[in-house]
Image 1 (cartoon, rainbow, N blue to C red):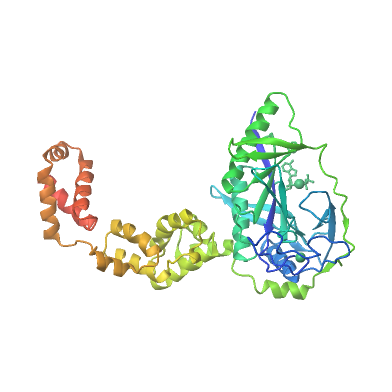
Image 2: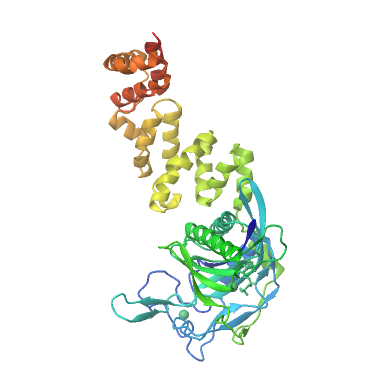
Length: 475
Ligand code: ADP
Ligand code: MG
Ligand code: ZN
């Protein structure tokens, strides 16, 4: 039997406001434990929450960017449960009337475009953090994170593969970053994802029983956890057993999911409207004002980059996945109108360094000026591509490529006579390889090119070397 996966994601995005959602405490990360707390976020009886307007503004931005319907009136509700990191005994969230409903996020997997529907976007507060002592059976409570604003974004069960789920998450993160409302860092927990997944025989209309997966803090974990869970559920069904509705945790070390709690233990949160907070009324006027501040979003930018710069969809997708990277690309093309060369170098050399350091382009010392200078040296044949790649890490560290080339004498050797002499020497030193070449193993030329490059420390013009070597070997 052929099966199909059905996936819906619940994502929490921590907002980049300066202060918390219902008090003026700082949201700054990494401060001394319990130094950013007050009676409101500590949940002292009698204290009253006051809504941070910025949080609503950020939520409206995301709703507009995803074409969601913004409710003119939305309501905060208490979600009741006990946990040591939740001093009030309830979390302030939204339930029956969320900030926004509907809308969609467009993804593209294997050249197939698809709109993933959204159920809702709502505002809520984060809980504190428990820190468990490694040495002793003791846990500490840090309330600095209590009351930090979150948006919860719930998707429809519209995704059909782990790849689609990851594409959705990446697109959502990219939109949040473009809007500058969330830093999108999954490892640090500012973007968290719970995945709901079920399987059904392909062609069937009815959804299967879903399982909720928690504890995935990277795209790779989401992919792996979903792949594992699909296999597990299909095996169960083929074995004549049933999938049970439960919450499972992804065990990173073992690459498997494990049961955490079943349906019977599911919480009954006893939601009710929070009597301490008035309903949130949002005027058309305010929405229009915010709409005017929205930047060009990833999908629009991608389309424009394909049209304006002639980039292939693949390149445009990668370059526009980050607003800062896209700005860097555009700045380069302004002074050096060879977009494909710029994009090739960004997608290989630049992204390699960025990924190594886990940084965004604006957090590095690489400037569009230096980058263009390097590409011009390469494009004009002043340096070879080997040298260009060799010196790139230094340029990335903030040095001028021209200076490096001058200082180290790395200009490309374009003098045909000088190169011919070197080629001659190499050919004479390797009679066996020459013999092989002449017996028809033409690809031995690669060996000779390599030798010449070594001799010239990468400076020889490869086209010229190829031409000279062919002449010498064919002679
Ligand atoms: P719950 O009340 O258990 O949280 P919801 O109906 O609110 O369930 O859905 C939560 C998430 O689960 C949503 O993202 C939704 O798309 C997804 N979902 C719902 N039903 C299924 C299913 N059968 N298979 C996979 N995902 C599902
Ligand atoms: Mg749920
Ligand atoms: Zn506070």
